[in-house]
View 1 (tube, rainbow, N blue to C red):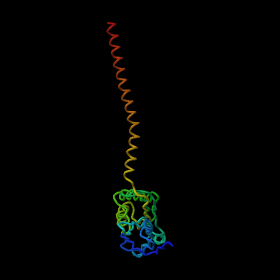
View 2 (spheres, rainbow, N blue to C red; view 1 turned 180 degrees about the vertical axis):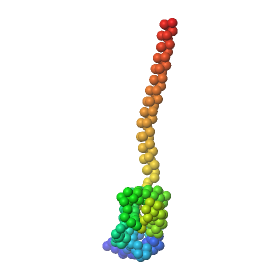
View 3 (cartoon, helix red, strand yellow; view 1 turned 90 degrees about the horizontal axis):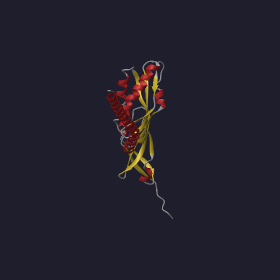
View 4 (tube, rainbow, N blue to C red; view 1 turned 45 degrees about the horizontal axis):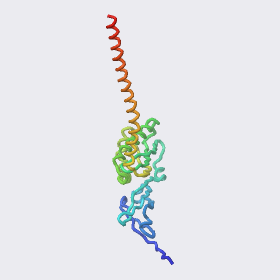
Length: 230
């Protein structure tokens, strides 16, 4: 009879929030790459956030990397009242490490026109895109939870129109960037673009050379004809 493995509790480190989690499995390898979902409302003092973590087995220790953050809908509903305008957006951009999806959420102090809402949305998108390019995934999660991303964004947008709330409704890591492949593909694209251009340029240069040679021949023939006439 084969031995039946007894399941055990294994300690999993959650460095983002400074806590431990216990996973129930036959082995540590079985927990590797699995996902944990946690409600961080208590840790964030009432701000209702759901987090998803991916378990990673490293040096025989179980740790986690954050993968998705969601601001819960009922928390957003409490922010609504009459006489305001809200602006939502959802777009894909990049950090230093990954392709990500981010959804900013803004509420103005009073009702504003469509043009103002569009300006706020575009300014927020441009600022976030430039900001995330300089950050790693882990840093972004940290800054969203501690409001260090929302504060400078809010100050930037208040120059356009005063905001009551500036939040990140969702942030998710989709896939990691493979820089070597991307560089390779760029080089191939450059070659395919440059080569036809080079051929065209060479053709144009050759045509110019031929034209100049023909002009020279014509000039010589005209000179000879003038000499004969004389």
